[in-house]
Length: 243
Image 1 (tube, one colour):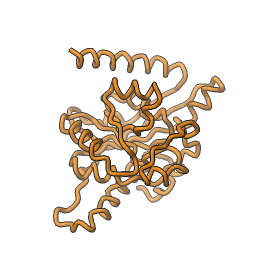
Image 2 (cartoon, rainbow, N blue to C red):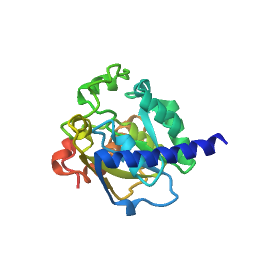
Image 3 (cartoon, rainbow, N blue to C red):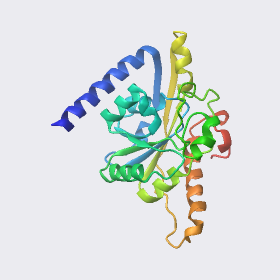
């Protein structure tokens, strides 16, 4: 009974989100033909703004279970989304085994799990995230106005190698301008580009334990190249050599 009510609430929120979004945003989505039907996927995307997750949840034709930075649950809006859409809170900058198990369980159920491999929006907070610190000051870190990729965390390589499911690359362009334009009562053009699924990503079984991190880093870089290939060169940051 609860699951049915939750599904209805999700549908209502998605409908409302699209209606409200159409007032303040001009959203175009391309590449939807690349999304396979009835297949567990890891959706990977750039993360230029807090709006990226909600935008993908509203405008993508699949229900996405996102990994959500645990500190964002202090914000009522994100706490509500987390409870309603069964999002997975994660401690960034460390191997969060609980979050990893939850993500693998969702994939095993055939669901789509969403990951932002960059691990955060503000590059100035990168060192703190890598130390596993909880980012207490959320205000001011809601958008990356440079709209350029930053180096990814290794977590996506680890998850992909354990899940052995395909990955779906997605790029979101324009989301970093939404809050600024809202304050000026301007509409924002947002483009969502969906690429072709790739993978599964594997680590050779005979790989020595001490070399596994190098392979995981290589899988992470491959994932970021797939995302970067959907972005204009000026937005690719350290992944300019993406095909």
